[in-house]
Image (tube, rainbow, N blue to C red; front, side, top):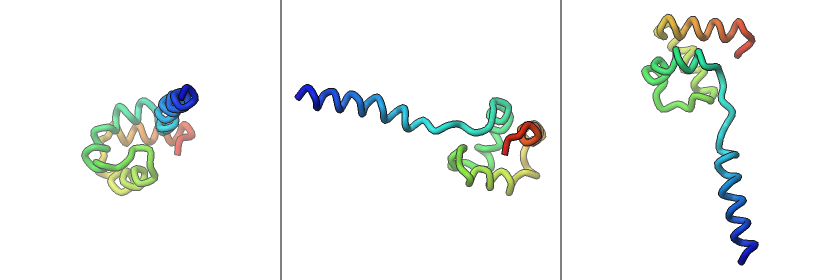
Length: 79
């Protein structure tokens, strides 16, 4: 019984830690592009290739601050 309790305890600790995917981008992208992401790409995982495709498709409609943040991110080595 004790082994079972310990096993459940370890699972309870490990699951939330493994569920946290690494974040892409930087603070400026999150600050300046959050509204655009909601407007143009609602329902898409922000850490997915689909979000990249959505941003590329809608780049001309993105806010100037978001476009500037994307340009700065790319020039700094971001993809």
